[in-house]
Image 1 (cartoon, rainbow, N blue to C red):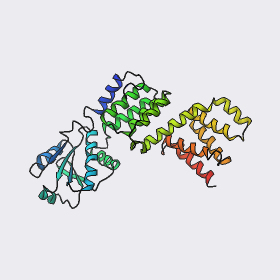
Image 2 (image 1 turned 90 degrees about the vertical axis):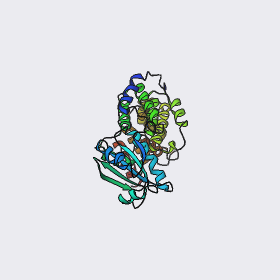
Image 3 (image 1 turned 120 degrees about the horizontal axis):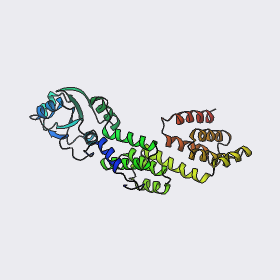
Image 4 (image 1 turned 30 degrees about the vertical axis):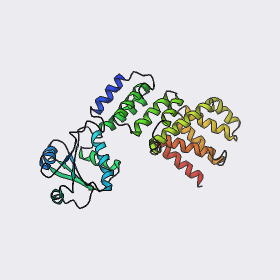
Length: 317
């Protein structure tokens, strides 16, 4: 992934490393994650929680949900790079401690802070809820990884494609499965006008990653960018659309060209109008492209929200 845009990523890597810290996700976490027992509980949990929050994971080898929860907890502990620790307690080997902590079902996680339990949950929560739980425990701060992703997105938004690419690469060196960073690399390649490399990068991802919303979004963005390149010059298409207002192909090409020029709202308006007048044309091509634009923008984007409202009004009027 290094050198995708032939950029000198030294400065960007230093910025990302400073934000992320020196602890790669999943490695170097010996002091952050440990097995403990009844005898060491005071030192490993009570004493340590005076300085940093400690999550205590009560588990057992035979527990299926534990096998889902614990790896995700370990991953997040690595991301938070020292802001929170994890102590794992095997309830089969520490039944007295489990009884004292009133563990009735596993997995069960209890958060300790300043020497006392302050929060907890039972069951294998999804990663998003675990992040929220940890952020609440650490005072609402996102992980260094989250901050690095935000910074990379800001750099890309400012037009510094090479630096953004190097930052996403640095993030992936710490978390190889991070879909937001993979999507960021593709966005950089699209912004650089290298659709072929962008598609090759997506084709090289693990199949499971391709089902992720972020990855689907950049695939839609890439499809749209390629279609926009092939659609023609915007002003010429505007003139043709005015001269031939009932020609769906011209209006369709105009919408793609508008999107390629960054005029996304105009592109959405044009496609919504085309759905209204020629809904079934070319196997509902206008509606298909609208959905791709919405995927590329993300479901929370104001243009998506308003565009979906207008599309629904047309389809169900």
